[in-house]
Length: 284
Image (cartoon, rainbow, N blue to C red; front, side, top):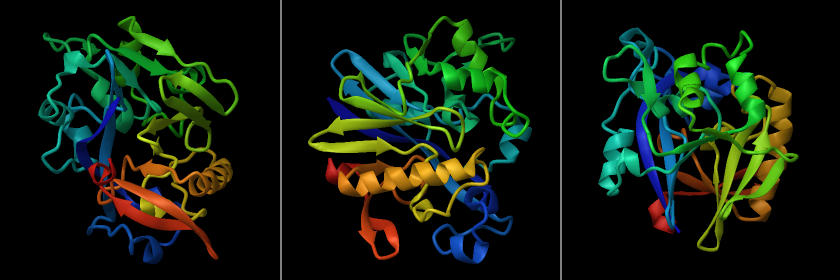
């Protein structure tokens, strides 16, 4: 098995929304904002090559949305999903599985593109099975008013219409061996039944953090995004996970941290805090 990191691009989101009740005077020390109070974020993905299976975890924002849509998110940098996949020697058609942690547009938008006539949509990965779970799919396709702007039907329904959608069974909050060397933690604070992959690789456990921990700046427990639908549940989920991450020496792969690709944690007198940051390829 081989695991590859790749960045699908960078975008900006409001710093206050990303840090919730934490004052800007504190969060800007780790995530400086521009003149519009916007902070830069990555959309970092993982690619797992395991025998005949080539699995992509999340797909980024994609490029099919309108100019007006993208004007809100200030896309920047030279990274793209297709470009970085090609640099690794793979094409879109090589992907056999797409694991979607959840269906917010910056995590699944790269799954779908316009068709040739631009009068409909089709999956970017025509040979892939797309993996979600039934709880989250129901949540996303019948969205609450607060999350509706993050669940875009053109990103979601074409997956099901293609016949390429399958569901992972949720058995409690942690399901082992969903795939070879991959377990799944289910969390409900950010959105219902978000899936956090735990990948056993070269003697370590790599955890793809999705939106449970967007960046190293979110490690202290009260640093919870304003986007989270159930912030008190996020607090409980973070506390439990961070303690386990220290005890089991997890490598945290940070999907949204624009500076730090990976980190490890340590227990201090103030609670769980950052230990080390490093690039994925420095460790593996």
